[in-house]
Image (cartoon, rainbow, N blue to C red; front, side, top):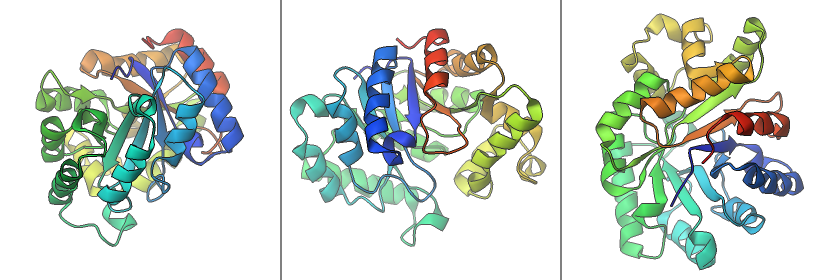
Length: 288
């Protein structure tokens, strides 16, 4: 399944106005983006299994559609397999199912995440009618989860990582598995306003061990995680500025070893559709 070089990650495609979501999906396909990622927010990832994906698949004909990412605690493997099997063969051919263990504060069931993910994949394999390994990704950040993704799925989609992480993940994955990080984008040129908007995105994650340990591995310090995140942390995790600067930040992930980058454009209202920004970025980024 060819994801293209650049995709769009959007909470609006999952949780926004359904009519506008369908219009936006059709336009994004026409703009040449390779994959549309149905984004979520901490603790509130898509709860209707593959219903949102089916809507987007119905109004597009070429673009790959990905869930990013379904919590394994909220989506039992038998239910996921049944929803996947209910799709047409043509729709399944364009669907990537992103899976994740979420974070401990967001689920009472959270325990032994690596073991839980391994057992979840075992259950999908045993059922046999769910997404095959070639159509699964894991929202992995830590090394052992990344290695599990390389062994049992098509690859990984990490969130809020810098290019030094991309280099490390590429080395762990090897040459074959997909590496498709999400790059958060703030299309503002004023440093104060841009960093303030970026910090609203970072805020829910600054105490979550999966991410904070990953950032520390990238050379950040505990001080960088305080007071909403240092300017250094913000500037390396979030692409902000004019469109040329943002495009360079995005393509740096490709140079560092990513196969695909999912662009998450931050808006004042998270469920909105930043269609003007998507159009400009499509003209600057290597979407194919």
